[in-house]
Amino acid sequence: MEELREKLALFLSDRLYQIIISNPRRKEGAFKIKIRPVIVKDRLCFQETFWRGTQVFHENYEKEEVLAEILKRMEKDFKQLEAESMDGRLNALVSKKGKITIKHQENKGDAPVKKPDMSHNRTKKYLLKEGIVVPFLIDLGVQTKEGQIIRARYDKFKQINRYLEFVEDILPTLNTGKIIRIIDFGCGKSYLTFALYYYLHEIKKLNVQITGLDLKEDVICKCNLLAESYQYHDLHFYKGDISTFEGMKQADMVVTLHACDTATDYAIEKAVRWNAKVIFAVPCCQHEVNKQIENEMLAPVLKYGLIKERISALITDGVRAELLEECGYDTQILEFIDMEHTPKNILIRAVKREEIGEEKEIFRPAEAQEGIWPLSEMKEETQTALMCKALHVETTLQKLLNNKKMG
Image (cartoon, rainbow, N blue to C red; front, side, top):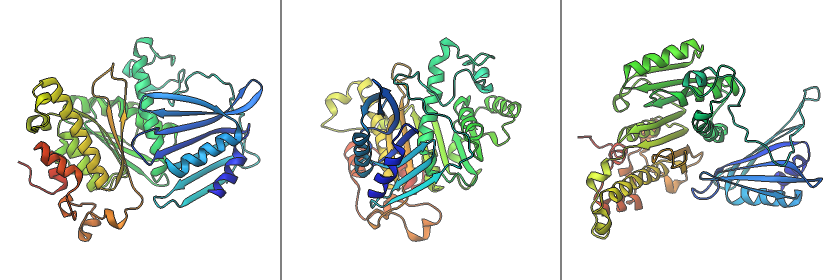
């Protein structure tokens, strides 16, 4: 950590724009931390903002205090750090074994730079900024033709930005030096798909190809017409079923938002088979476990239909997250939007681990190149499998990952 300490000490000044700490080692706790310089009572301080679920917390530190805080978090809690200042950029990655890789790039002397905003209280800055005209936001009814956000649609504007913040966190895990292939299963009206393309292609200037898939032909037709009108040349929509889709052989990122019931399982299974680097899933209508679940100890509460339904939905998503962990992904359960807007607010975000230790080897070598590993090949039953047995449930995702025939 000594090299990181020396580099950070240079960045922690009034020339710093921000430091972003992301990719947490654990599911609980903060999932992202941002640090920026602020002036408090004529003194230079550093404000730490960290996100936990839908909550945001702030704390101000002196330079040495924040330096110690950053190093502690990188040593114990996080794997990734990005710092940007008027002088250059710093990237640090911590491997599973604790090895730190640091890249430092200095700005060219003739490049124009702006001064950091060090005001203590700032208005919320969104990735899609207010006042800038975005065509799909106008068609969605979120924005006026002048670029102003329509007050009654402000929650939708915040939701879109919240989604893009989740995407921004995982960008360093993708290979931005090549075409990034993304598929959105069950894309529906696709406002988040359009937002994703706009952010990655128009704002971040990345080479992306995004495919949307949905069952509704009229929706697909409309989305293609909109993409064409915006000149989004690498955004295409197709009619198709997630479970039978074979239209591509590889994807870097798989998104499935509000795909109904077991459709989420088929999308996750395909992502795992493709060795997708990133998986985003917001499950919906989880009925499968509700029809199966039986447990003598839980019988007193399972007799209440509403309680049974909610327990079943949470177990379904918990099993999905754990199966992804077993397949080599660092997986988080995050709150997508506030409960007051929809009860379906769980986001499963999974990022492929760079290294899988020998104790995690769970697939046959012959199948490793294809990215398929039946969980039945594991040396012993996992806690997830034992729990499912106790509850008398077997999910579609378990069957798919075990290469079982579906009924």
